[in-house]
Length: 141
Image (cartoon, rainbow, N blue to C red; front, side):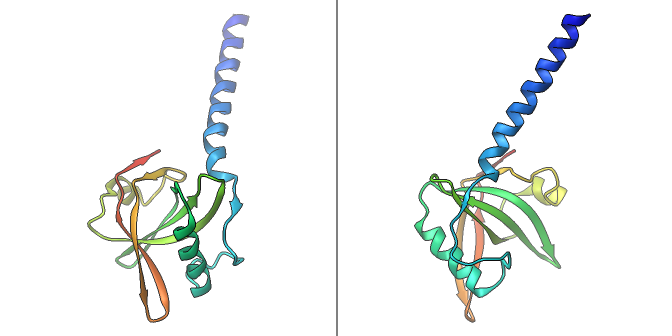
């Protein structure tokens, strides 16, 4: 009986350690933006994001939050470089982008999931920049 209890403790401890190791990569990073604050829709924040996106190599994208405003869908995404620098960016999602599971759950259960093969375009309209997701190859939760 004692051996069985120790085995459960080791298993639970191993799972917790694995979970911490997996999420640690997403959470800890040095900010890469020259602006402060969390106003993801401000022109100055978007300009800093555009510059950082152009400068980053080996970029990885992680879902932070799904947001729906009327008929438009947005993803707040944690963007991380291979060098440990990161920032958050708000991306608009086009209706034809394949994100059925995220849409169905409105992002619940997908926080921290990597958005592999994310492709986007940036558009300048009336002195504001929009980041629009055009493709996501797969979501790795």
